[in-house]
Image 1: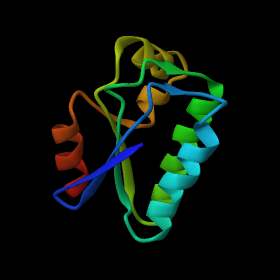
Image 2: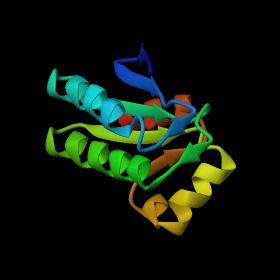
Image 3: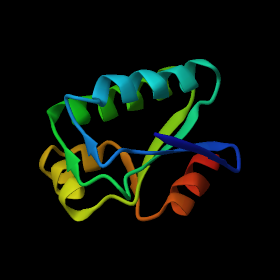
Length: 110
């Protein structure tokens, strides 16, 4: 997991696969950032090409955690197959999804 701060927003690179094997670790690391006060989070999905139900649960949990702590979460650069998962589960209607990291960062800063 790579974390980069852009204009006060933490941009976190999601691993190639977000699944049962790594979703808990990923979720706990991001939650730790939120609890430390880094409440604006962009999940950069540009390298992620697989997301199972555990990964979906992780994204939803992080979204709720960010909101409950007065922050925000956005997803960026989703590959086609990951975007299809978001559409099938209707999470594209709930989560803030942007074509690029730059657009996600700008939206969270507003």
